[in-house]
Image 1 (cartoon, helix red, strand yellow):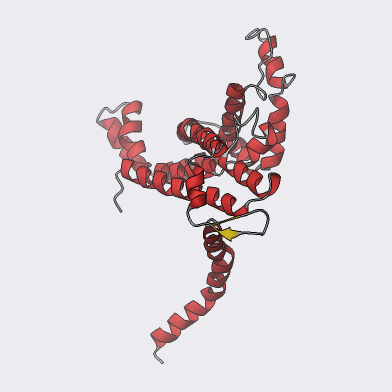
Image 2: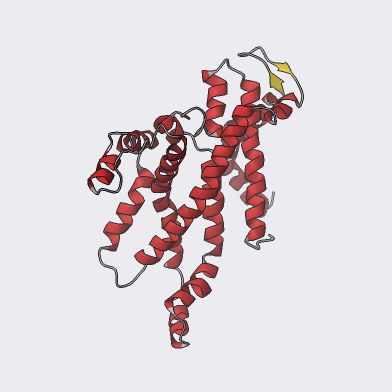
Length: 290
């Protein structure tokens, strides 16, 4: 046995346990869920139904409502969050800013808070008698309290505000670390050539951050399509199904309604298909053909 072969076998020996665990806890459940999506029935009494579950998606009004809500969150919240994170990271990267460590920690802190804890806090903050309404009324910005939780429109706004607050700092860290790796000489050369701060931002910063922007856009898209905790804890999907997300609908199909694990698996794989399509489109829009 050659030294190269021994080295390869040693390497595989070290990663074999990790590979086995990944297969058992990631790939095996994914395969089983895919097989389960072709079955239907109550509880564990499942029968093979082929593509009937996938056909059912197109006529399921609750799924369509959840899909519309989730896509609305995605279209509005993700771009707003990305822009906020990018803007804040540029400010925090300024050499003239004092107390950088404090501001970076304060903005990133929401990303490490408990999803359930912050969702419950937002529910009370945006309640009819909550702090937000009290402040708006004291500032004479409105005469009557806004029904943040019980009105379909404002309930969606509350969810979008909550997830934007939670994840902006998380994405900001990626941009900030990338900005610190950009050579200052590039900006110095641009200033010598007479480029304004705005021109430097769109001509230097944005192009150099393109891979990170693509990465955060895709991860944020995946996270939003899997939105669950905020909806369940703040609005419970209501009023009606006006804030219901796809992930909450999967939970309801599995544990709240009369259990239909086969159809729940089908709905979960609809998220996979949507993620693949959107990720492909984002790669194309970013001009990344790799």
